Length: 173
Image (cartoon, rainbow, N blue to C red; front, side, top):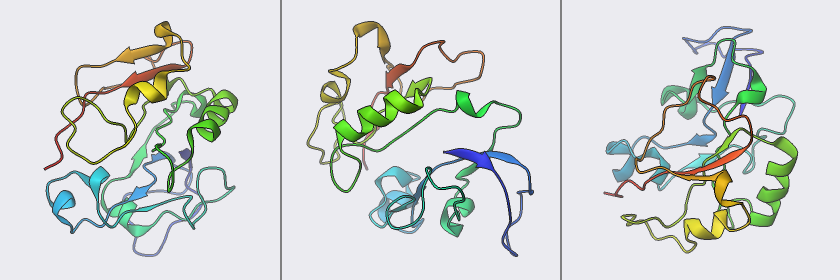
């Protein structure tokens, strides 16, 4: 999600009121085995915004200290919010169901969607759905299979039409 900082807690540093930011919505514990390896996406004690707390569809969101501490609030400068990348963990409960996600993507029309929590070659994490299940309703020209676990995006490299980018899996421990 992305937005403008409206207020700041007393002990928060590095952020300013009015600053335009993107927020990684998962609060990892920073203490479990996976967090100790820097694999916060596999945290065994994660807490996601929108799961009991207000999330990206709320007018205002209180960002948990864990997200701020782990660098999950990133300055986006003057990048327009409509160029924001949407990353939504999907694969059924406790995350959003696919049909609901497809409807949200139709409404939001993000430039890039990167599916998470899907089985990919080399992925050792116990996941039920294959990435091919996620991309099934999309035309081949809308799907890019990236052979790396990361991708760098800038306003200049964003596509003109919505696109699905499936990244290569990293190994889980």
